[in-house]
Length: 231
Picture 1 (tube, rainbow, N blue to C red):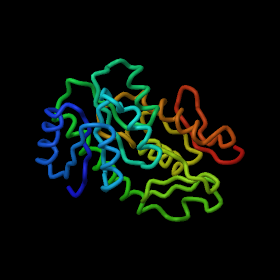
Picture 2 (cartoon, helix red, strand yellow; picture 1 turned 90 degrees about the vertical axis):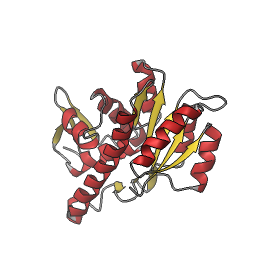
Picture 3 (cartoon, rainbow, N blue to C red; picture 1 turned 60 degrees about the horizontal axis):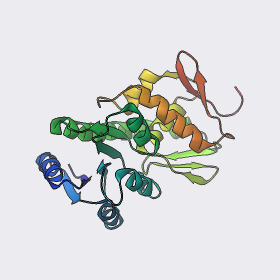
């Protein structure tokens, strides 16, 4: 695979283990042993995926994630010894796309990363088959599926990869009610995770869209519906 993964952890043995496994799967891997080093690498290299430890000295993973999200839409997987639900929720809310706890299975980690890129390939194929007429040119929300950029009233939105994918899926099925299960299956696919993460991501998307653009409607007991204008 012609993809580059940045692995960030102050534990050199963990970095070595992940690097060896990903390189066996034909990924390019760049190691980093601190948050500052990771940000420096991002400024100088094209990175397709970030595996990020949370508990690091000087600059922890949460701060690194915030810094990344200020500039990039790169998918981020948190790797952490913190296994409480609240820790996972915090990680997802600040912009991570996935979360694994230590000790972890290197096979599962590798599988999650590979699943992410398989899903992206499927989405590109689906989007390329969509007719341009399926998206209204008068919509205040414009999504660029090739660059993963979103613009609301010509202002760029800072969305994580998962947030973008959820919003795109909802928008391409405007006025249709989608269950949390449908959203999870389309965005996370065969990745491991919890369906409640859909609710967390929807909350984040709404916050970023703002109160004046209430496009995502909750259909209680069923799921969500994307609507622009009056129903």
